[in-house]
Length: 281
Ligand code: AMP
Ligand code: FE
Ligand code: FE
Ligand code: ZN
Figure (cartoon, rainbow, N blue to C red):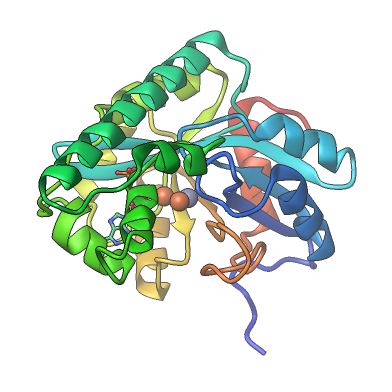
């Protein structure tokens, strides 16, 4: 039996999970119940571009499980797709909430624009249905890909992105602008700690250095997309730049990639994160 990275005394922590408030399959209550059943000590709710699932998760957890309030903001930097995690932020912060509402509205308009292009290309989808199915989450290209499959225009997600929705696809519309610097500042202003999500192979060290110069506080080191070599690389980079290391399963639902707690992080990671956020306990 392989020993998960950083497993310490059975107190498992998972700092990356999605709910129906973005593209996860489970409600916040279901995620909490699953985390408890799987013996976790703490989870972070990190929905894409939304903080709407946090309160429900915290209410469901009570004192049985620690729920770290979080977010994963979809940013773009020179065409580079960078996801910025925020931990321990105040989900009621009015500036944060209004920026997220604007982003969500812009995403709806973008989905409509993509749908117009698909119609012109002879592969129409029902955009009203797309938006309804995305509710209460944030609409994105995966929802349009599902609609293309349902309408029988493509056979797979891969084909939908390759032919229509990907950066070289015929109906491509870039995501509305959200600069990583703005995301970092917004998270910070809402009392949170910003962390670069799963940099993987496509982000260079110089990019991380520049983000650190803009106030980034950490790197997501442990992630399903990171093999041992990338974990070593980002651990070393975090150490060199004086950044925190975090990690998690990026749970989206049962049967989708890893399950909750399957990529646990050392308990010390949560303690350091709390210290950085000025949270006690
Ligand atoms: P959006 O935020 O609307 O631009 O959609 C981005 C999401 O689309 C990503 O988080 C992925 O889940 C998904 N995605 C992007 N490219 C692909 C691809 N080539 N195949 C499948 N899913 C993709
Ligand atoms: Fe996702
Ligand atoms: Fe992500
Ligand atoms: Zn994620």
